[in-house]
Image (cartoon, rainbow, N blue to C red):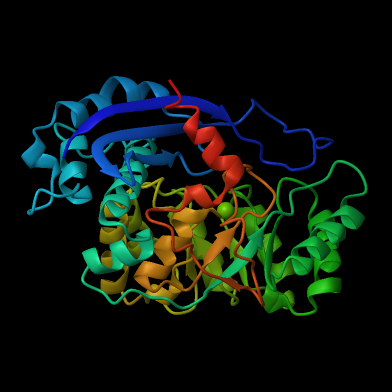
Length: 390
Ligand code: MG
């Protein structure tokens, strides 16, 4: 078994399904990769696909110039599982990280995570198993076949008629089978945030069905003021309150804000996770960890983060991985996490799950197709296949 080619291209990715909303910054991109092996299944070469999750821009230079060449140059025995029949993603990850020093997690972690996603897709396809089953077995666990709790992420600010249009969006989520949602707050007057929350709650009825995400917009004073006003709503969680590395502010707000807080989406390594556990003031069994496996060097590092947080008293049920796509759903299913985000209409064609598996009563299942099952999303697999068409 060999990796015979790795292709990468930057692809545009929109935060918003509504073109009338100004994106408010440079156009977002992601890296899509195809990792071509010499293994055949059903007469076709097995190709593993991956992308840079959602929200951190493409990683083309790092992938093409630094990390993909290491995989292509690796000796077969350094990439393969013991029986030589398939890729061992953990061994391949060691090849990716050869020569890398501690620290410097800012962007390379996403590049490595992107290739890691493609490695897992290829390895599970060669094993002819869906990723959740392959990953569970690889990590010595029972494969979870149960439906996974998912919630709809979205609720970005609309430039006009914000409250009414937010309600329309929440109604759409409910019509699609979701029972829980997450909307954006922060960066605008607090009164506007409260109006948004009231609008969403007019449909969701219960604060425990609504989470809010400040996208790191608050500092110490503004975060405390917001926490005070949000607390009476008893929301499901208050996410990404302040700068992800400002553990002091995070800890101060955790002391005065009793309902759950979520953090970790913008932390990119085991070292960052350790600092969050030591200094972030979060409460195991009460707060929520939204680390994104792709953003923190892929699954080998994410698994270390899960172990680390368990050693600090957290449960796997406290994890709700960011991303809102198929890969995170498989990870949640394989590792027995509390659930995961869904992006049913933002970040297309990457957000969301299999085209033909609905969300019902706030739960869904990963597809049974081999690998991650990108082939179950028509628009997404069409995009990936442009990498290998010629
Ligand atoms: Mg977030």
